[in-house]
Image 1 (cartoon, each protein chain N blue to C red):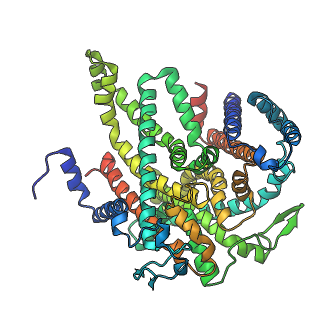
Image 2 (image 1 turned 90 degrees about the horizontal axis):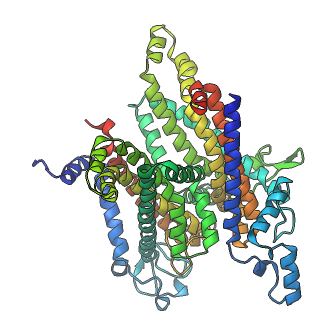
Image 3 (image 1 turned 90 degrees about the vertical axis):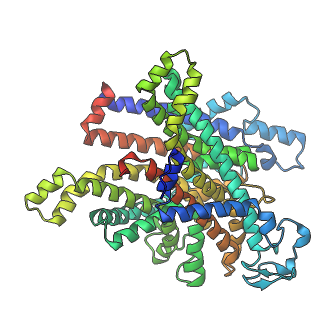
Length: 324
Length: 293
């Protein structure tokens, strides 16, 4: 088991190193930040001084090593535009995004699994067919358009919910959160629904496929023969058996939802990291872009690592496969 | 009914049984024709400035403009007839989707089959890169690449290809790896036929069914991804408005209740994507041996 952990950990470190090089080089290729940072009327001396100060006169590999050296000390550089440490900038925006992503993914999972198990348990009923039809729509319809329709319907036409912003926030441990207040909650509803729809469709399909498969197995037959009630079979046996793929997808989706929040945050002017990155791309704020991408890559690698470990704990075949 | 003898004929006979898929196919073909002949079916050329009048801007559906005809779907902020703008936008969206789909199909298939055929280090290198990329969401990759390359059609297609080729590579690799071990490939390799010919004549054709399925899904995906990028302002330049750009243009007016500017281009986009997906679903079911009767 220890060998397995070490092996996976080293893999994760290598992936992170490769990603940091790709991200750094990729972002380095974007435009020339000098034109944005320095006003066009600046003299030649000021220009050159600024270039030196930002370290943009050094060759690319030196910039990378400086960047990595700083990164390992927890310093991701300063934003060209806001002139504050990037970590502070992203850290200030992260709670808003995390709040949105967690609420979306958790509610999509809870609701999706319940609906999916039902659709798998009673595949012929009209409710199941409706659920599956809706899940197809959730897959096909581009999420940004759904966001617009949600705004049009619930914010503009009905006037029930606000169309943008975070609303009233409460400070907990020095961080502002929206979910504890009623006003904040009303602001979360639309973006969370928008972000959750795709995940919901996916969870429904996953849970349904798993349920249909497992209901036909001997485990269920014997449980029924033993006279266990259907409710107990569903709760004790079925849920346990379908939980492995669902747990995996839950982890992976957490990361991809974080990335997809970019779109939702832009539509609902949600002041999270996603909106920050879109704005930064617009003005070529290089350190912010690099830091964001490294952060997302780090989250992905960490989530994959954790999933591997959980898998190894649950399923001994994974452990053995890795060492042999 | 006459039984079709060619494989394509048999395929079509089975396809025809699913009425929903047939309707979807008709819709896809119809939309492609509309896009192709946009210049003939549109009431106006939305990009000829001489045709436009600001007096006509942001008018609701059914408004009779200065051109003397009815704007069935209303007009946009520049006074363009929205129906015409949708036809032209459809053209750009389909163009980009097809181009990105075809390039990623070729690139991904080549890489996947090479990895499976050559094996060894090449295999490890290619598939590791592909797997690494697949663990990242396509939207994020496309976003970064568009930001890196700047705006324009070619850049956008490049970004979509970079975000999507990996799906084809995975599929082609899986199929080719399975075929590679079969006796007919070994037999073909034992003949004086060159390895390249074996790959092209025998390996590639047997890998196509799953690739066709992935291709339909990915074309729909790249149309959707392009619309999303354009909506975020990172897609095409304003001079070439795809459906996503039209939706984006109408977004600010939605708050004041002028819904049609965003709404109708979105409806067109969804009909296109759902129709392509339905056709793809049917093809996938037909290729799936487990669902065979």
